[in-house]
Length: 354
Ligand code: TXA
Ligand code: MG
Image 1 (tube, rainbow, N blue to C red):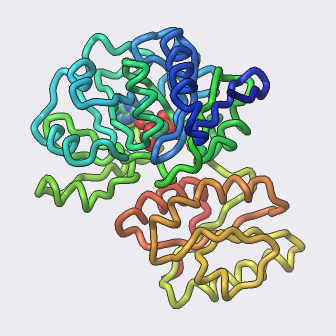
Image 2: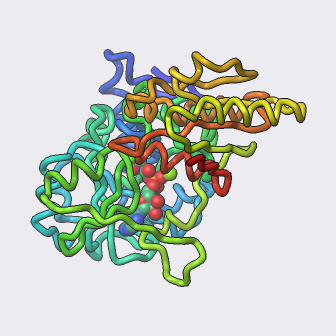
């Protein structure tokens, strides 16, 4: 029924006939206080019973994650939200009814029942209903809210396939449900909706345009800077998420100048004898000859760019590239989430061409 790698059970739930048995076994592991990685429509999550503080503690150990960086709680039904949040403003209910199941996480005032280890000691809790059928089936079989960060080692790109989870966490967790690749490919949008005012904490699978349209008011964005004395509105903001093992240069330029700028930069480093990895749209990739190249998709389809981003970054990390040059995209729609992750990967190496 399953494979085992380094003590971690691998359940292939794509093989339909045995899937219900595998899901029942995975739910049993969660109820018993174990850790199970599962697919969502955004990225794979590493789940534990959210109401079991000891089980949740194991997530931080397995990932090597700082314990003050809180987790998102996953539920199967809207009704479960009442057990976790004590104030649900009408705007929150409207968003949940429209976007759930889906890639939107709502931050709300928490109930005492939610253990501090889940929320990093905050008085708020982040909740979503994921849209993946395997995630929903697991949550229903478990019958409890499940706390789940992305199922990667801290500092690595989020996993968008079961193999990515296995590469990072085999031997450190109890089981992985393999449901195939994740469709969205970047994490959920995190929205602080306490008091009914939408504050965007992390761009993701649901766009600010969609949120503003539904609520009939603009979404505010956080422009928190590392060097301010103020605590970040979301603890995750203060951690450098993924940073590639080699430097990544992100080139922001008007479309008509991008090709020449990237070619010039590539040439400069090649002349220094460096092996250059390129991270490009298919449009630019057709125009450039490269040592190593990863193609994300069409620059006019942000959904393609998002779906392929983390897999491409993982492959570049494993390649011979000594530096990466990445193309910048429009921040419209899902492009905002793609560019947010690329800017984090680049750190200070963002090159702006007017
Ligand atoms: O798509 C996703 O959101 C995936 C899948 C598995 O659902 N999960 C995910 O979790 O990306 P994670 O742990 O990698 O990112 C959660 C982020 C962190 O940056 C954390 O700081 C923030 O959510 N967060 C959690 N609870 C919060 C809260 N109460 N207030 C503000 N930010 C919170
Ligand atoms: Mg993460």
